[in-house]
Image 1 (cartoon, rainbow over the protein chains, first blue to last red):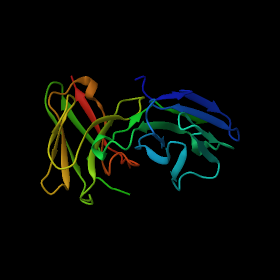
Image 2 (cartoon, each protein chain N blue to C red):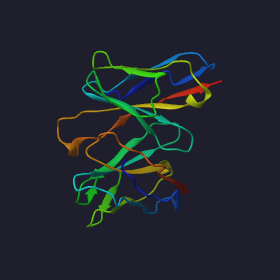
Image 3 (cartoon, rainbow over the protein chains, first blue to last red):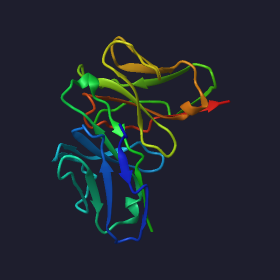
Length: 117
Length: 109
């Protein structure tokens, strides 16, 4: 169990550029979440996947944001035309479902810190 | 969205017990109570969760009120490594956990 891996750890970009982050969940986990966290706040839910299907998107997720999980394994989160307000930590988490609610817990990666200049 | 209320911050001394309270008055009968913590520069980390009965694991204990409208996370003997933001959440399983601002715990040596 190597845990949830996120790359890159840090990304600095200029306003208007596109960025893409990658998340590799724990291998047998069928559910994958993306969260965003700004300084001093708790993580905010963005979207989640059950296998390759994107089941829910937050109202926070503008049309500049898109997430994919093409083969039900790794996931990417792309932000187009970045704005300074997109600066945040982007967290990925995974879990396995179908073994009972009492077993469900999220495993988080260390996040990708995005700075938009 | 599921709402919990926690103190913004708490302080304790090393090697002493810490009791972190949480109110979740809107909890439904099938929601679990989850606690996660976040150390500096890391993603949140699972601590413990429970439904009705008190729960113990190697990290902490969870005491759940009889009416389930509040709970307390207990760290039996705090260490400096327990300094973190602690989040209390209620949800069905791990579905779309909604984090509040949590309690920032400071441990004094």
